[in-house]
Length: 129
Figure 1 (tube, rainbow, N blue to C red):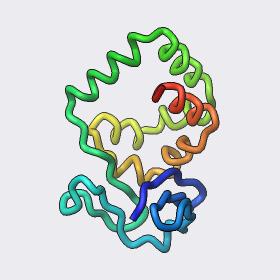
Figure 2 (cartoon, helix red, strand yellow):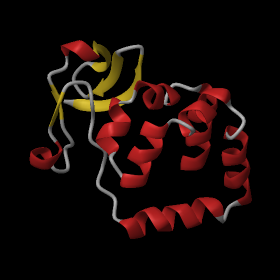
Figure 3 (cartoon, helix red, strand yellow):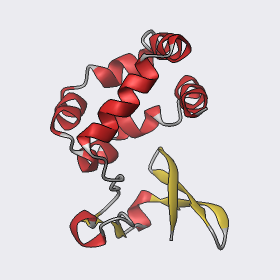
Figure 4 (cartoon, rainbow, N blue to C red):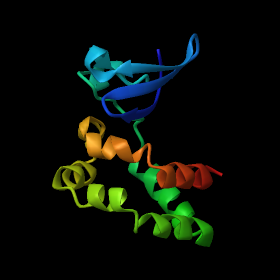
């Protein structure tokens, strides 16, 4: 059991309580499920389920982030990154985002590679503060 930290080039990095951070090839993973709702979130193959957020929680976080000028500047800085731009223009990613299909996003290698983008990592760290 552990938390998926990143995914790149077919390898998941998972943070575990017992073994610390480990790397596992996607092909060797048979199932990943959310700890929140294992029965509804279980999937087969290299994918993952995200936490279930209510729309009001998402909206509240969005208002908090967009109401902060520093946060807005951080997000604006991501707009020019070619890797992020390419992913944002991908129809599969757009459809998954619009429909809230976290499973599809986590199966999309282009989307998962963004999690390893240095600018994205820095932005997420700053936005969490």
